[in-house]
Length: 332
Image (cartoon, rainbow, N blue to C red; front, side, top):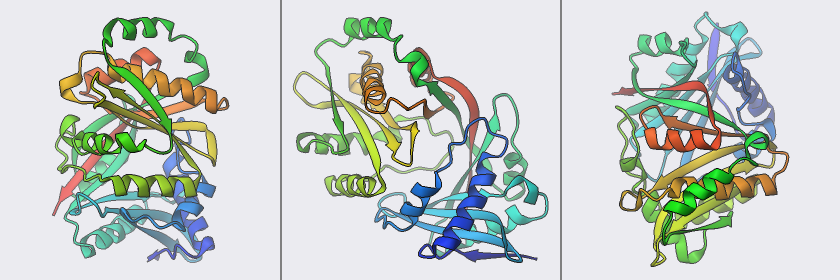
């Protein structure tokens, strides 16, 4: 009989067993292992996050953990939402483990007052995912589709000269500034303002999402937590001639796995588009990434299929599509 229980995040043995089941379920059949490495997961579980409430559950069959899940509940914005994760290692599938885990993470969400439930499944390019019929059986509708892309950084980092010429011909009076880990004090208000417009600027399909709510205090909390976890953030901003922020981009590398980097956000405010600012920011941060982390092999990102402009920018840099991210939603 499958017994699903909440994981005590202060018990490293429980967290390790939960992580192993999550990892094995997440990477099965996929071309890359992009799941959070154990050392980072261990630290994150023990490190307070004032902007998110994360509840872990594990499914037990006797003494074995055969499935795992997470309920991610934002605390600073979209507080009616919960982002659910369900993982079942391949040998444990087709016997109700996923259904039991989903019921448990949904119960956590509804007990927390959340009525918009969102979950993801991964599908191969041009293929299908077992998550699709699973989601349909549990009344989740496909709400958005994104492409999951990979850049082989060492292969392409030396081949961007023509892109520099393209940017130089279009950037005009704009300029790109970079920083590591901490947003400069003089830019933090502009970064908050840009992030708070982000959701309204990107294609989200049928997902019900409200605006973000970033403040300078929240930015500093996020930076402090990243430092405790050993995460390095490389960021760039496009500034207009008067010094105001026109675009923002960041990429992150975890000390626990410096061979991979993850794109966070890339955005150009609508009133400043048409000057290749997104490409300019990405060129700057990707070169900084290569210089600071020479062992970094791949950079990961996701873009909505209908986001033609950003898909084109990523294509210019050398990103290639490797999987599809399917986003499902259930509104209670």
